[in-house]
Structures are given as structure tokens and as C-alpha cells.
Length: 172
Image (cartoon, rainbow, N blue to C red; front, side, top):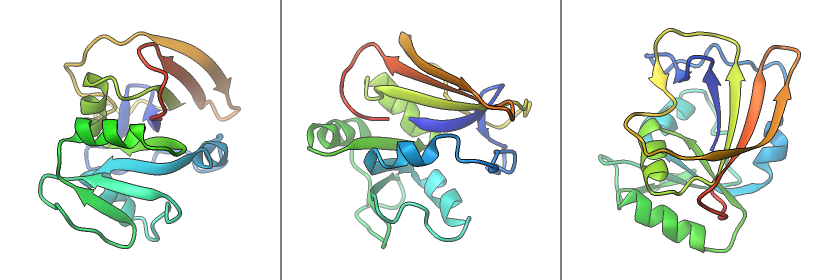
């Protein structure tokens, strides 16, 4: 999981807007991006990304989990309607680079409940939104993490990298 969040734990405003995200520098994104060859996301995240213009991940194999759009494909992704946990477990068992969980609180919740996220890279922006779409939807199981790295930027953004202690696989 590589994701940006507000200090109070929101990944977007209630409307889905992410206008508060810093875009002034890379913040390690390119270094992370080259380590991934597959990505997963929910339908709402995919639609939000589509609204930004050109699809930003054309060189990655993408999967969008949706209850309403199934067995379809567009030029960027394959829509998946099967059991998320089973699909991700199977995807993780295949040879490849890291798998990036791009977004979707429900997707993250299911992955957390099934011990499928191995690394958390959180870019915490120095803003309190007060409300919005939360990073994690409760209730969740307790998960112990080990801090691997922390980096503070002059903009006030802090990036934390944690390893989940239950696994040694490769979903980020």
C-alpha cells in the first residue's frame, strides 16, 4: 500500500477530491513505481483516476474490483468481480514484481482482514481535513507493524514505511 493521507487519516475529501495533495515534488513516487508491475484498486478509485485525464499507469497490469462492472476490460485494466481475497492471494503467488494497492478503503479493509498487505508506505500531508474518505474502515483486526523508514520533507510531508509482521510476500 503506497498512499497519501491527511494527518487525521483521510485519503480524500467526502466528494472524492484530492486537491489538498502536494504535487510540488516526487516524494519517492518514481522509485516506488518502478518496483511494481501489477496494481489493484476499487471501482471508485478507478473512476476518480479516470477523471484526472490520461490514465497514469499504462505500463502496469491493472485490476479493478467492482460489484457492478464484471468480466469487462478496457485498454487500461481488467474488471474483476470474483472474491477479492482469493484473487489477490492467487496474484501474489504468481511471479512478478510488487503489487500496488492503489486505493479503495473497502479493498484495503478486505486485504487487511486477510493478511494480504505486506508493506505500508504512507505519505502523511500536514493538513487536517476534518472529514472525508477514511484511510481505513473500521472494524479491523489488530496488526503489528515494524517501522522500516521515516522521512520528513521540508514541505511538512512525512513519509512512513512499515512492514507488516505477519508476512513476507509482496503486496504494497
